[in-house]
Length: 139
Image (cartoon, rainbow, N blue to C red; front, side, top):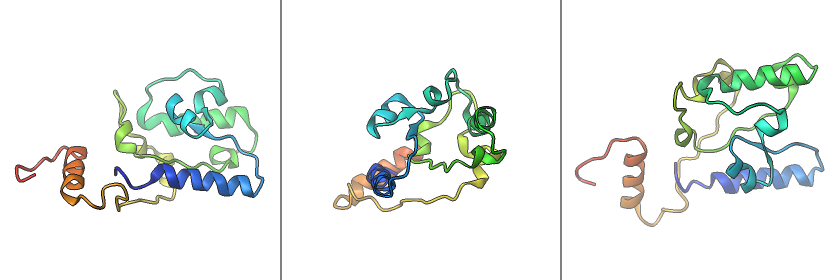
């Protein structure tokens, strides 16, 4: 949901990883997202052509990792963190990424409380209604 500090939490995790001096590629699904976290797009890291795969995307990336690395496990043993508002990234021609069989292997953390709109409950309620396309007349 909007204003729940997803970006802040992601940046905090990045700081913790840097403090531990661990090496990692910071990968994002879009160019703008990659710029926001000073990382790379997954397509550029794996040297693949970007497509509209939708729910098949995680399985596709898993296969790409298997082709490029040798460990023979999900994502070749690479720790994968998915962050963001997945409802904002619904695919054009397929189901959302969380319908993928690989998605079941992820542990989900949901942020429910808005930090940005905590003073204006009416506005936040309206944003949630728009988000889920269930706009009430009272709003």
